[in-house]
Image 1: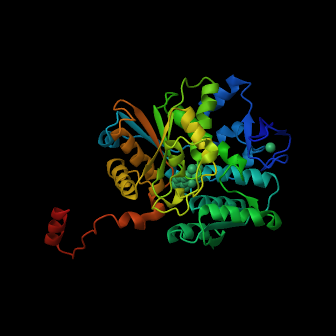
Image 2: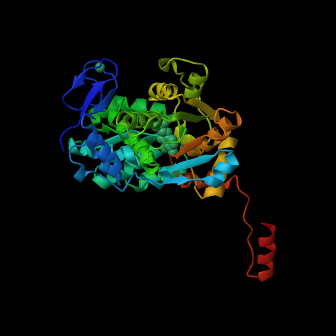
Image 3: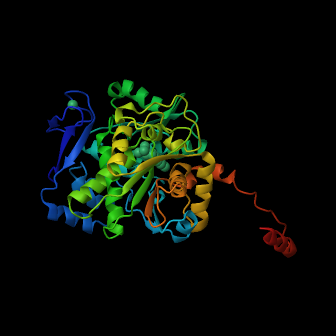
Length: 409
Ligand SMILES: *Cc1c(COP(=O)(O)O)cnc(C)c1O
Ligand SMILES: [Zn+2]
């Protein structure tokens, strides 16, 4: 496939013929600009796509036929009328990224990043992660038959670790936050010959191309009529910024006539982007949280590396950033599972909790339509869910005991 993009530096605007992971001139963060010159062809790709890799003309990979894939992407967009009624919304959709092979949208990024790295001759990977990106990297590295080193915070819940190790990844716990893991990698990756798959554009500029497809798929599923609002959790900020880029692409191609307001949600124990939004800070003034805490471990980024891009995208779209408490997250998780059968992990349940809060505050109107991105599966952490549910009854082999127990439920 011919190269259909140009890589550029966000900082100094330099353009390079060869793909890089950081700007060779100034060390700045890179991005890819795809060629939409043949708009009819591009619209055709968007309309006809039925699988994630059908978007290959907008991915940085030369041989998509050899992509390292596990069937990621093209996740269901589910209309949720019962949940909408409970939240006081006219219409709610969820984009269920829990349907991805490893249970989160991180598979999209790892499919592209590992495919790209294999094409370029890389032989080993490393990633700093709160657990989900590590699990996805472990799965795609296994699929590629190559070793992967995964660094996670030492406090990461055990179930998340098992998923990484069972895929054969070399797991190392770090006494620190996700942000610390990521910084530590930077020091040793070059001498170890590790390709850094970390899902932040400053280390892995190709990640931004993976999340824009969530926007493409959503628009196609809704026949190019997008909801008023799209809510995503914000950890590093990559998914929100990536989806906003995807909506811009669709606007540029004339497939949609307006972009949705982007809603970024964080947990109150780690909400630097929300703080920057509410205090009207500049994108380069987003604070670093000294001690992140909370239950949404997948988004506990002390500093959001793609936060500046996410904050700009929220403002440009007329969107909003909001934080929610752990208790609100658990209630939202139960609400979506009980009303629709969609079991979201705590990080993803922030979107439902955030939308509920913004609806109550009147920011989201009663006639507005909303799509929440359910970024990961609740099955990542069933122990936490169980702790907030009643203990089920246990009965002997006795019909009366069953009648009594059933009557009491
Ligand atoms: C990584 C992750 C996020 C946050 O994505 P960012 O791009 O870092 O903002 C949200 N939810 C889940 C389940 C994740 O794994
Ligand atoms: Zn530069």
